[in-house]
Amino acid sequence: MPKIPVNPPASAPALGPYTHGIRVGDLLFCSGQIPINPAQPGGPVVGDIRDQTRRVLENVRLILEHQDLSFAHVVKTTVFMTNLAEFQGMNEVYAEFFAAPHPARSTVQVSALPRGASVEIEVIASLAAG
Image (cartoon, rainbow, N blue to C red; front, side, top):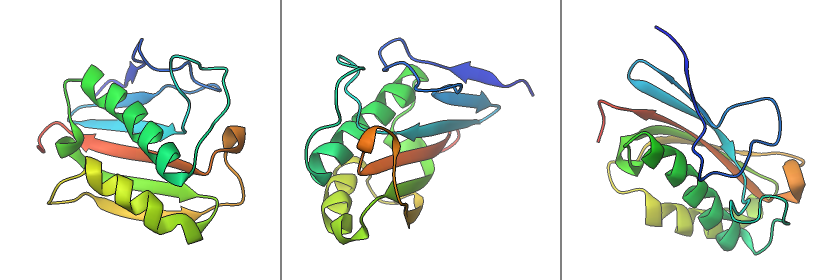
């Protein structure tokens, strides 16, 4: 099966040599998204963990919608946070985007994220789900 790159025009440009997503067959693998506002891609990451999580998931939504998918198609997420003490705030916003049955999820604390972000989220979506 071919790898099909996914780079929605509405998304902020990638910060490095990667695509926003790769579609292979029934699966869409989305690169980790940080809280960059696509309207100001060179702008700073701003806001508390709730604001940043909301922006991250809106960025994920742009990728999903570009492929005619929704959060209901997401089967796995990985959340990277610089401070797990902020887990509750991230989790509250995360719950606004994902309905039951929730995707499988891992959450990992890391020492740093690009652009000083506090949270990054990557997802795997299945066209067969949802």
